Amino acid sequence: MALLYVIEGWDPAPWLAAMRAKAPQRQLRVWPEVGNPEEVEYALVWKPPHGVLKSLPQLKAILCLGAGVDHILTDPDLPDVPIGRIVDPNLTMRMTEYVVFQVLLHHRQHLALAEAQRKHVWAALEQPAACDVRVGVMGLGALGSDAAEKLRMLGFKVAGWSRTAKQIAGIETFSGQDGLKPFLNRTDILVCLLPHTPDTTGLLNAETFKALAKDGPLPGPALINAGRGKIQVEADILAALESGDLHSASLDVFEREPLDPASPLWSHSRVVITPHNASDSDAASLTENVLQQIDRFEREGRLENAVDPERGY
Image (tube, rainbow, N blue to C red; front, top):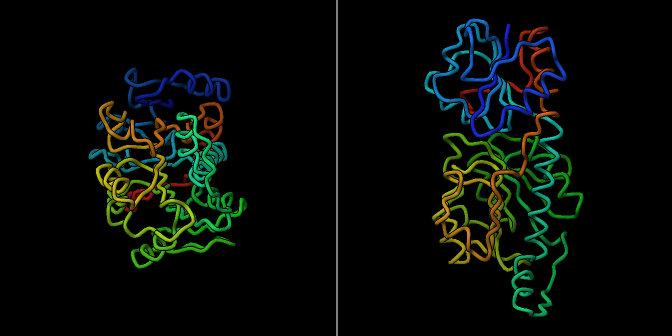
C-alpha cells in the first residue's frame, strides 16, 4: 500500500528523497500522479486541494507536514479519518528562535537604532532591563510553551493565555474570554502563536490592541504574530500603529499570502515583515516524525497529536 504526498506551494522532491532514504520499502506517490487511488493508505499533506482526500477510498490517516492544520479542516469533503499534527523538536526550536529574536528586537529598540544609523545619528536610547518588560504569549501548545519558557530564562516577565486553563512553572497563565483582558492589560510585547479557528479569526484587532499595557518601559506595545494570518486584522494593525495603541510589529503571517506588494505594511518603518518562514518544515527532520506516527498508528490504531476537528487543532 502507498503513501501519497499532496503538497501545494512546496517542492515535494526533498520530502521524497528523505522518505526514500528512511523507508525504502514504502511505495511513494505524488499528487496528481495518484495511480490506483485504492492503494493509498496515508496522505502526507500541505495545503491539499479540496476534494483530493475524499477521492482516496482506502485512506487510513492524514498527516500534516507543517505546524498548522486549518488548511486541511476547511475542506468541505474531508474524509472521516484521523489527522495528525506535527509536533517536532526541530519545528519547536525554529519557532522559539524566531520569537526570541523578535522579542529582543523590540525590547532592544532595534528599529529605532537602525533608522538612526541610516540617518547617521548617534541615538543613545534608554534601554530597560528584561525583568522590567512584560511579554505575553497567546497560545500555550508545544510552540508557545517552549517560547515562553526561553523568554522567562532571559529574564522577561512572561505570561501566557490559552483557550483552556494551563499551568506552566514560573509563568503566570490566563485562560478563556474572562482571562483575555487582564492578560492584555499586563502585556508590553504580545506574541501570538495561536492556531486559526473560528474563535481566533480576527482576534488581533483594534479592541485587542487598545487593551495592551500603555505604562510599560518601552515606547509602546509591540505585536509579534507567527501564528496564522487570518487571526490578525491588518487594517487595525496599521491604524493602531498610527494611534499609538501599537508602537511596532513583527509579522510572519498575513490575511492573504504572499503579502500584496502594494500593502503599506511593507514600507512602514516600525514593522518587520518575514515571509511565513518563522518555523519552516525541514523534510529530513520531519520525515522521521511522520514515520513514527505511521508506525504508532499501525501498532496501536491511533495517532499522537491527533487533531480534534471540533476545536480546530
